[in-house]
Amino acid sequence: MTDHRWLELAAPYALRALDPGERADFEGHLAGCAVCRAELQSLRETAALLAHAAPAVAPAASLRERILRDARGVRPIGRRRARVAPWLAAAASLVLALGLGLAYLRQRAALEHTGAMLAARDSLIATLLSPDAGTAALAATGQAPSARLFWSPSRRRVVMAVFRLPPAPTGRTYQLWAIAQGKPVSLGTFNTSPDGRLIAEMALPDGLKFELTAVTVEPAGGSPQPTQQPFLIGKVAGD
Amino acid sequence: MAAGDERALGDLYDRHGAMAYALALAIVGERADAEEAVADAFGQAWRQAGQFDPARGSVPAWLATITRTRALDLVRARGRRARALARAASEIGEGLAAPLAAAGDAPDRGVERAEARRLVVRVLAELPELQRRVIELAYFGGLSQSEIAAELQEPLGTVKTRMRTAMEKLRGSLAPLLSQGES
Image (cartoon, rainbow over all chains, first blue to last red; front, side):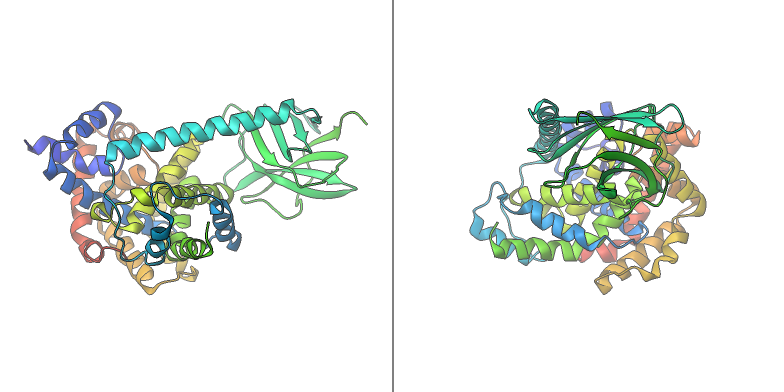
């Protein structure tokens, strides 16, 4: 049974703009209503075309490499390998097994998301607890914000905890540097949440030994070398 | 991953990577985060290729949906909702069409994509102002209908009607792109 009221929910659902209660109701209805499913599919395609309205900005060439690198060693699930290459290669004319339904896909995405968050947290804790963990406290050259850095050369990871640092202004980002023999090496960009805090993990270049760490404000995307005076500086503790 | 598969993933990126990146950047506002969202999205698409069902939609729509979801998740995870909103609002102030018209230097790969862009931008610009704002706040800002109503200080019923009307108009005007399927 399809009535007007249900069909009206297809457009906001396609935009993911329904409030949670209505969304759950509509998903329940969707399972048994082919008319609404068809309506939803065409509105979804329409919504996806809105992506073309985004201002065109070219991605960095390195993004392609990163995606290919990430995919190496990861086998697509649910497919026999032999059929994967022809599919993606002929991305224009796909013929694949039937999908498993919207609800399942959503649930799966939610699970994946949770799994990824847990994995990130595990990695962060492992870095903090590793036997070779180093630490540095970064103090502001002026006032207020502070940060503490933990790193593990064996895991090649850095964990950064930042306090009382307001989010960077639009178009700018914070960037963390390791100063090795006077030469700054970027460890990555970051931003804080509105409450001024951040705990994040970043990669530590293999074999990098550094005597100082510093944070600068840089244009969005970060800079190859600092363009500003650091406002947070920390000495490596211990030796 | 076999060499052939890697090439295939590269092809997929070459076809749709620029679209996905522009979309992610419009949502998250920072290059590093946009790259992360796109890398996540292609990773997910790669892992879940087996679940893709061409009967349910086109490849670019599938990728755009995954990318948008990842980008909106990232905005939320970083607690940048307020800033994303402010950005969506300022885009609306200028009208999305303005920065787009100036983006002629974009290294679009396909002619079809440039054509798709022109049509989508024009059709959006032709919508009545409030209908366009509702669509932009929902799609790029990730707001729900009641959040949009609060943001625009309009009755919820009005927002619902505008969203539905706008989507129906978009579907009608964008039909040439929809019927092509995979573009």
